[in-house]
Image (tube, one colour):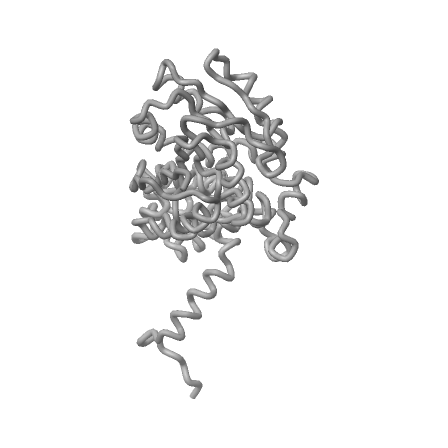
Length: 350
């Protein structure tokens, strides 16, 4: 008689094998979720526990597509099955109703997914080979932002704005405690902080510093007598004369450690003694929730294959070491900024 294995106690080794298979097939799971979102399966099941036939009829898909995708959805915990009806789990609901999950998913789908095939090569070359493979021979993705394809550009900016923009109300109150006469926003991007600054304080001069191509784009949408523009590559050009306050929101994580020291050293050389530097970052060692830390360390891989090939999301400890190497010191630290546990470091000249 042939021996038939029976599922009993699951050993750590068997559990490890199961987890390994989830990683091995993770790209397929990702695309299955994308297909279910595209076909409207998850949206339909959110309010309508349904049979396979009902899903086929409503979503206008084949029996093959419905059954195959639902099997995957059951295995990865997206749906649950009661008798013959399927209904969304809380995980599926997150893809539909949680903005952070939607933004992260679209960012990976539209910006990172194809380029991730060049991850190992990007590590070896210290260059964003994924970016160059799919959007041309740009030095970094930041030089190409205004030329990205439609969905890619939309998802990149939604991701970039979703996190740090939600800190601005708290950050402005902190920066303006000492009533600086002007602020230099280095890495201003589309100018959302500039708008917030100009609205918050009716007297302050706001200086936007970014790559020349991004500055030219920003000038089309930002008009104010108190706003000045500086098209500067911070790795190649000198800084303008700086006084008052410097603000960098999720900017330094776009550079390697050596580059960060270079940037901060140049700021130090260009600023007055009483200038304060405010660095806003979501540090990987300061996250309360597991999902937040998981997301941040994976964003480092985006920097590797798509952004610049050199940078990462940093720990607070490492950033403080880099600040010190640039001849600066920590003056104050403001924690739990915004809903995503950002940290605002206030640095001054030693």
